[in-house]
Length: 131
Image (cartoon, rainbow, N blue to C red):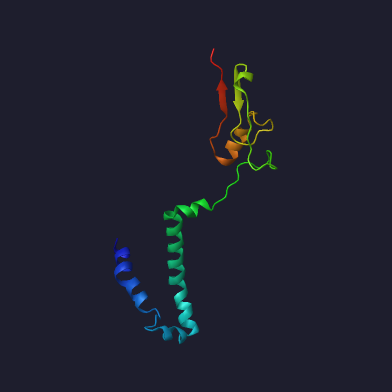
């Protein structure tokens, strides 16, 4: 605990007090190359903390991530919609939910390979007819 206390109480204040931060706007234009180089590490640290905070606390930041699920089925359509009449189901129908099936929209077990390679846990939708 002593090294952390020394870092917070002594080292960090000494480091910050030695940074070449000018007192006026005009002072920024009089900084030398060494002064600008000394300002890079704290600026990078503050930018990184700001970015991580933005990613953690702004829900719209997560919306910008575009992860594609369907890589091959009916890519020429704007939205994949399949309709199956429940009356056509004899006893049981197993539908794919991983988008990897070669027999779309029915499951062919492709989710097993998908789950092993991605550590996912997706499985089929099973529809049964009541007797």
